[in-house]
Amino acid sequence: MGNVPNIELPSAQGGLRIGQVLEEHRVHYRIVFEEIGTPVHQLRTFSEIFVALRDAVFALKAMFSVKYIHRDVSSSNILLLREPGGRARGLLVDLEYAKDVTVKSTPHEFRTGTRDFMALEVRERSYLFRPDPEQEPGEVRRLPPFQHNCLHDVEST
Image 1 (cartoon, rainbow, N blue to C red):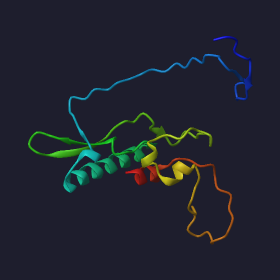
Image 2 (image 1 turned 135 degrees about the vertical axis):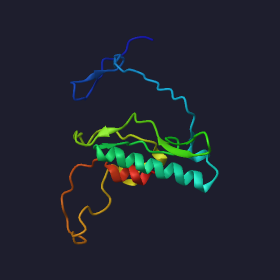
Image 3 (image 1 turned 120 degrees about the vertical axis):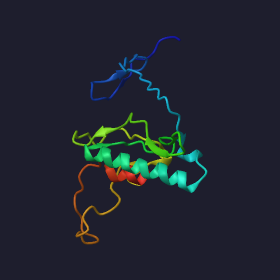
């Protein structure tokens, strides 16, 4: 390949040379379930879609109650499981990007989720609505750094 020029790129760690190999220690997990669910975008009846979405919202509420957010709600991550006897229930899966909301992140944290299902504020990485209903239109207030929150997960549902 020839000589790779030694070009420094700015970073918090002091620079990165082009051609330098970065090692990232990651662990890949696969969880296999006995049951097979159907993604909500493949469901064909309103009653099945409603059951899947209702149970996904219950799951989000349970996560919120222990201070977690999902951050990747999409039609592929909400499944309908048909149980023996005809009963069905919804499942919220793929918790890869779930996060403890009590752990403060930097405003530069990377965006997570499926773009087509992202809440608008998450996509824009900015608050778009007045956080305080008492705030007067046109009143300027300094907003805190943007944080993904539980309402963004519900908007994605």
